[in-house]
Image (cartoon, rainbow, N blue to C red; front, side, top):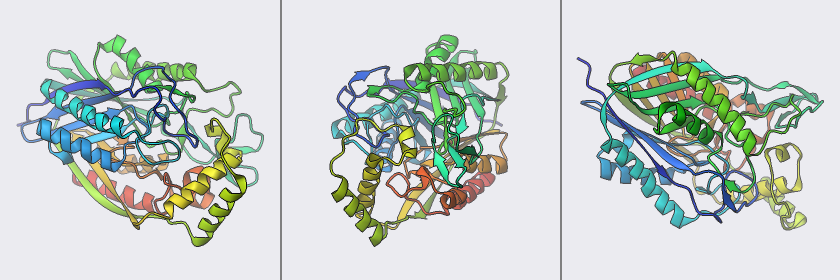
Length: 442
């Protein structure tokens, strides 16, 4: 006999103060305004034998040490086992610095408050438990996703080579336009929460305003449709994916772009909601810890970085956008030289990655602690025995970009050695293999 399913949800404001450093860029950006608020949104599911929490935070990344703090508090307060808690970041590039990556300083006071607030969202979601039904559907939205790595006429692969660049031959990889929607309702049909899973970078706005970017726009629209419920955005395998159409000359940045993308996504979600099916079955959680070797800078790399920094002096750039990656600017080279020196001080040879599976009936979520390339997500989906498979990137930690082995041969931004790209070349193979193993035994 199937266990009775209970579900609860809660969202809490995690907006940092103006003046905090923003994450995701190569240069320091001090927040000077709040464009919209950031939230931690949690859903708790409970059956007779199992209890899980799924949390989405409007943050760029959440490092492993912060994940463990959140889990410890949430488990203490709610009784949910730490290993049954999945916490992910949406990957907004207009949220606060939470990890030592690229530029900006961590505000320890904010981090302390953040850990308690995220744990509170889980605790409150559990307090809101009631009998529930889960309905799942999937659709396709291919108008706002593009592989951002391009094969150029000279044989190189370049990330974000610029709009209407005549040297572009073709995209270097595929996209995953699948949009997975999980609607959780009470037994009398009242919406409790909505989960949306879709693979795309969240960096449409730029600048120095705090914002949840397009997932926030999407959530606000869907709340008008479903009521004031938490709408969780779980990012998919977005490591080499973004919203920029290089064949369209129109600018694609700023808050209006976030609104455009968010409206399109919300519209697709609403269409999918008209054809969702109930899923039933046992609630299960499984996880596995992988030890992935790290790439390290050579002595030659270190000497070159020191020499470069002594030659080019202090930084003068105010903002380095995604398009600056393709320009080979001095500012980008300075940032990478600093990354080499910081990596040279790393005192370990491996990174521990937690892969986590949460399943119920025909639905499964696969948590990966980094930014896997879209090919990795597609490979896992292809071998998954589940009808509905969602890849959740940036979950339970952050180990940087996870490129394919082929991408390392091609080169490009995502493979260049830095704290945000340090796993060894065969990480793809190990992660796909272990994810499929977990799926087949879940």
